[in-house]
Amino acid sequence: MDTVFWDDRYAADDYVYGQDPNEFVAEMAMHIPDGPVLCLAEGEGRNAVYLAKLSHRVTAMDQSAMGLAKALRLAEASGVAIETVHADLESFEIMPGAWAGIVATFAHLPPPLRRKVHAAVVQGLKPGGVFILEAYTPAQLALGTGGPKVPELLMTLDSLREELAGLEFIVAQEIERDVTEGSFHHGRGAVVQILARRPQLPP
Image 1 (cartoon, rainbow, N blue to C red):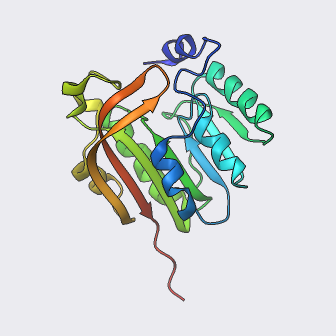
Image 2: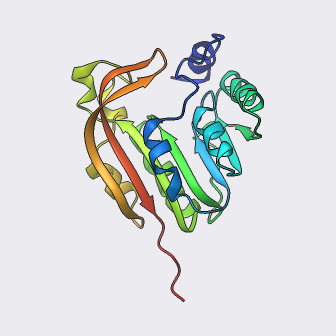
């Protein structure tokens, strides 16, 4: 699923994962403190625009220039501004201690890269900052309603606890829920959901 794949997927006029935010992100957004928010592998911008509507300063990064162009159009149509960064997660640098919130929904990566990115997420949060993640679990393969067909790209709660060591887990669960996000995420989904906070510095 390289840049060409995602540019082709986002070439359609419609928003292939919808224009509404991910349901878990919308539920957890109240926990993001004041400060800048980074949306990883943000695609067409649905989460970034939603968070900008809540008055967050949002940076959306993605490897697809096509997706980011649609994100900017969605932001303009919604009357908000977002910043976009065209980059691949392999080379993108998450600045340490820079972010009040980091968001990743269905950002399925090969395990070595995923571990690298998640380690950078832990360090990238400000004290008190939160990480919001939703992804498909291996149980999704039997449901077939979206997501990768390669088991190693899927995530488990146990692996995420290891990869995000150093964060305090507020919500950490594997569940099934109805996922209705455009034409590619539609139906019953097996997901893992994480809301985790970087501890505050001692006084």
